[in-house]
Length: 241
Ligand SMILES: Nc1ncnc2c1ncn2[C@@H]1O[C@H](COP(=O)(O)OP(=O)(O)OP(=O)(O)O)[C@@H](O)[C@H]1O
Ligand SMILES: [Mg+2]
Image (cartoon, rainbow, N blue to C red; front, side, top):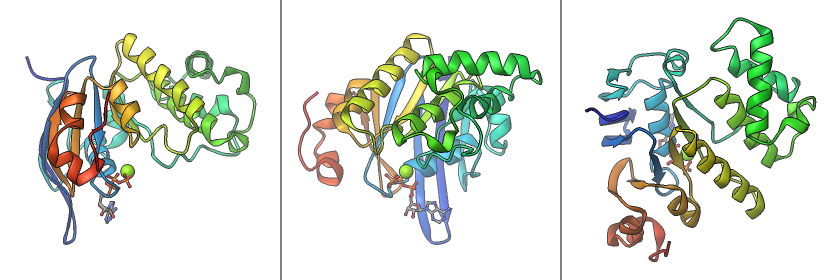
């Protein structure tokens, strides 16, 4: 059986810069795979290549066995794969509920159904009490939850989270960690980019490390956290689980 998501020899060049070079790995149904590496390693670029925001310069992306490179992001989203953005930009002058309804409208033309889906997802991300606030008024921790709610409303099977804990304090990060684990229990497959090693080790079934656009290592969290090349390129020292 083929993997749920297959990344096959993906390269992405920007002029002379190789942001991704020949990157390959699989994600199995129901897994959480952590994607880590130094700033500029190519993590966000890879998410862009996987979700149709960039066409890979070469290589293939297969989702549920179907080759999807060349598809636009909205088509990829309708197939069931959606990503969050590292720099969250909600529709600031719309309410929290309306922002999430925009996601829900990917699957329905009915405003009534979209509102219902949005309300459900706001409960999942624990933001229902802020439904009628303007999105622009939310502090960063709640903006990150809104971003997750917005993509959950598209009813994904595979979720790609780009530094969803970036800029959050410990209590807020803990809430997001619990949310990600809750989504896993609900059967959602996830690829998570995160710089906090303790958090990503706790969340992930497997880790993939990028460095200078190339895959440097792949394995269990403990294998990766004690890998000499990973320590040299990224961690500085071994990290305990
Ligand atoms: N649209 C673009 N045009 C030109 N260069 C780009 C573009 N997007 C990314 N890059 C470059 O590609 C490299 C990889 O960037 P990317 O944002 O993918 O890294 P990252 O691993 O997500 O880093 P961070 O941890 O800081 O978010 C960087 O050198 C970046 O400057
Ligand atoms: Mg990034």
